[in-house]
Amino acid sequence: MKIVKIEAYQADLPLVDGDYCWADGKSVSTYDSTVVAISTDAGITGYGEVVPLGPNYLPSYAAGVRTGLKELGPKLLGQDPTALTTLNAFMDYELKGHPYVKSAIDMACWDILGKSAGLSVNTLLGGNFSPQGIKLYRAIGQSSPDTMAAMVTKYRGQGYRRFQLKLGGDPDIDIARIKACRAVMKDGEVLIGDSNTGWTSGQALRVANAVKDIDVFIEQPCPTYRECMVVRKHTQLPFVLDEVVDTVYSLLDVAKDGAADVVNIKISKFGGLTRAKQAVELCSSLGIAMTIEDSWGGDITTAAILHLAHSCPAKLQFTATDFNSYNLTATGRIAGGEKLPGGLMGLPKGVGLGVEPNWEVLGKPILSVQ
Image (cartoon, rainbow, N blue to C red; front, side, top):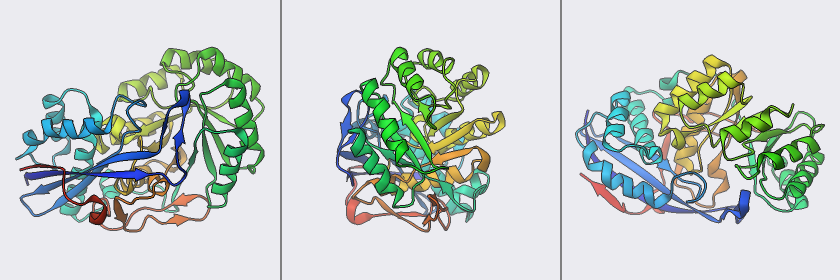
């Protein structure tokens, strides 16, 4: 099988709750999605999606996806989309770095592989460890303590049982945010305080000490691995690492140093499902719990998250999220993948990713390589 055409589509994804705010005053109100369609000489087309969290979160940005596709796309014509390991090696040779550019390509090729084999991507990834569904979290954008607590209450009413608070501001206000949100939660529900690299190690220690008797996870308090380790060594609170985890080598450091109880596996940060699968398998062997997600996404990204999350051993599947529910615009339609009681979400049905693009939203391609 050979790739004969690559097309890219763009869609704006305005948010249900308006501005999404996180550390250091950063915010986005509308996300920029790039959907990639890869066509083959066998008449099979696969779909992928990548949505960077704005230009100032990770070293990625939406226009960079399309620029990278212009560079890499012509070189992929004639390649076998089902030979995923060699295809990824080829992409790395032709375009050094820029994993987020490759993510939607790799995702679309997994969709092609599933469709050609008559199997779901989850089956190809190893199978479903969680037939009862995966545990979802809801991200709560940074605002006043009372407003954030009200958002927790709102989404508890919609079935969510895990909440990720966006912190990384003034430590005193962040302490109040954690306390206010925990106060409206029930036993057994999970609270995560995510600084998104926004604190210094000293600020993070102030927060951790102030909430040491509260049931809360501390996530990515500082910009660097070294700074996070300073905090890790001085708190008994469970610890999550995200932004500094982007390769299997970083995961080996986490295991060696005991640096985290949970790591976040973002599909586009690793460069697609192929490398994210490697990360999941390594963490599974090392006994490290995982949040399976992406930087952001629409329906196609959400479908990929669901397939990957269900392939994670249930004991180590900490949480995931349904990005398509954050957006007012749908980039696709997932077959199955329904919300389930208890803040869970099921596996998409059918072959491949089990998602069909929403052509009414995507319109005509903005880039075509053939």
